[in-house]
Amino acid sequence: MPQFDPAIPIYRQIMDEISGQIISGKLKAGGQLPSVRELAQTFQVNPNTIARAYRELEREGIVFTRRGQGTFVSEEKETFANLKRERAETIIGGFFRDMSSLGFRKQESLALAREFTKEEGD
Amino acid sequence: MPQFDPAIPIYRQIMDEISGQIISGKLKAGGQLPSVRELAQTFQVNPNTIARAYRELEREGIVFTRRGQGTFVSEEKETFANLKRERAETIIGGFFRDMSSLGFRKQESLALAREFTKEEGD
DNA sequence: ATTACTGTACCACATCGCTAATACAGAAGG
DNA sequence: CCTTCTGTATTAGCGATGTGGTACAGTAAT
Image 1 (cartoon, each protein chain N blue to C red):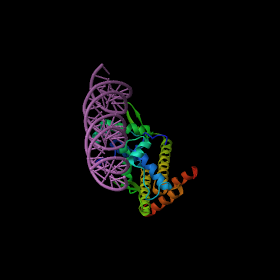
Image 2 (spheres, rainbow over the protein chains, first blue to last red):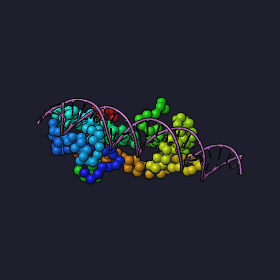
Image 3 (cartoon, rainbow over the protein chains, first blue to last red):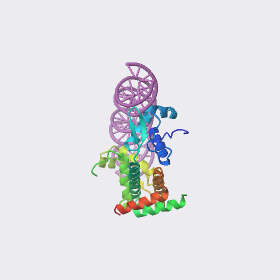
Image 4 (cartoon, rainbow over the protein chains, first blue to last red):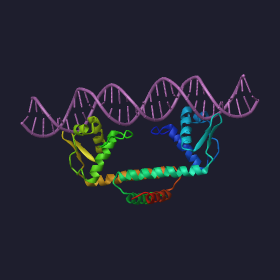
């Protein structure tokens, strides 16, 4: 963790960090996350900021919290898969909306995106 | 013009309005835009807000301004086409970035986007 | 009950973005 | 010149947001 990007809220960067660890499998379903104070210590940040990240992740269904016990990764893989799908749809919808404000129809947008993958790697 | 969406800055909505008129051809290259005060009157908004919109549009190369004379649509169609391309690339790049944070590779993202167009119209 | 751990609620404060009020400055025509 | 049109700079206020300080509240083990 070098430092935080000042352009992005800390709690959001922490959310991304945790989401990434779940996707990559470093954090497993049902596993416990560090306590807000511990993680706050690690990141040199106020516990409230960690709590904020946990709260938002809970709102998204990625983790759940038991007061006095801790915060844990959600169990149900279904939920997580559905969630991915929902978020993907939001992203895709936004993509087409942005492109259409430039005057591109969906088919054209797709074609451009496909081109993009050829110029870039992977 | 019903009203402005309170969730989006007024100056930005005005930018979109003008961009749309340029794309659709209602505003032609070299044509003059209304003065900041006139448009401010039309939209019942402070002239500074219009000026802000004009300034940003100028920064993007869509219009140019001559102090004391007015604000005009850019002449060079090339510039405008390049601009569209640049902005499209930014949007596309952001799209793939967002999707990859969900764990989707570019090819998967494309496939999902293609599916999306089948479920939606056009 | 006490202790020591969890998360949470409340409040204050700094910062930032947007908008408005107002005054300044360049251009063009009478 | 002076009027009247252009855009621009300056400043202030307001609201939203992010973060921190601190105190409260639930859980579990001793």
